[in-house]
Image (cartoon, rainbow, N blue to C red; front, top):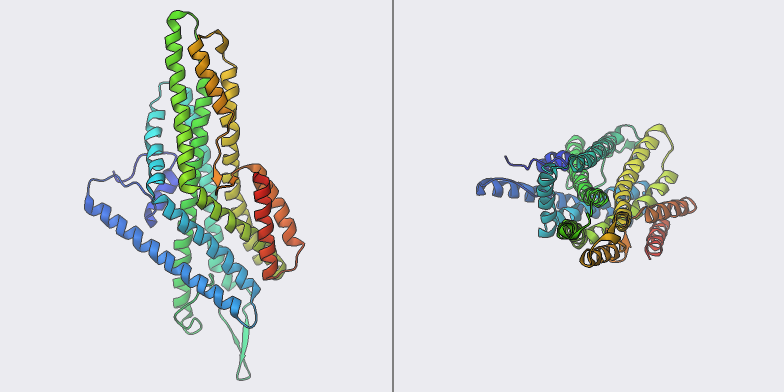
Length: 415
């Protein structure tokens, strides 16, 4: 078996291995591991080459005599998404994040072997919700991609006069620089462009779903720990004090494992989440401005609408689960308070006291060195940022101003 038997990663695992971004290959064959590594490296550096061409095209568009604001905004939206996914893939390749993947695979095996059926039920319920969010995000993400690929055939094509003759210019789905004449070799360029977009979409969608699972697993571990605290039976009597001490010690070890997991995630991913936040800030600013400059028709509204819904959905998944980590980690102190801790020995009370003190300091998924994933941050930044974008005129300067507003609101909210 080349892939682990894991339910939490099931959907993104099988998809991501097709593009070389799944980090755990279970085989003793060194040749097979090297072949997979070579395949993954080739796709990654081709992806990097495509992003470089997209940025080069963006520079050409900005330096053009007549600015094509709609193409600039479209280039900026997609290229930033691809750039952040590339950074996320580099993080997945670090030992820290690989350790988290291995931790989840091993932990799921132990959880599903737990003698308490309620523990298994809690985990499988989280797995089902995670699969549903993966499926919906997968469908929406690829719907956006297919709309991009079909967009040139439904848009009003630009024209250019050459020797008193009007020529219609064919356009491509993605804005990028080409080493060939696109008008002469349009179908070659179009197929190449669709391949680039398919690879980029696979990297973005699959890496996001893997990151969703990393975040959701911590929430699931807190749910299980909360259940065990609520069901903790602290028996009285001298004989039972040692049993109580051992039982609670095991729960403290589980709590420390969750803390270590979140710390490892933050060490490996906090700057990835920061870059993700920055590109989302630019996207929310550019999408609202793009609605102001593009021609309003069914195709354009559907195209931008599905893109916006997909982007907001992925943010809600990240920020909602980040908020759950904050709330549920603090809830542990209340769970232990509801037990009959006051009947226990001095040693057990001492352990419970320190556990409660630590639980009152919430666990957080960090966005860089100064922010956290929380619904408060998401709602405040989204509401104020979009309002700012609609109140401004559609120019590159206003894109920068709107993005700056997002970042300042984010910093102020995170304090």
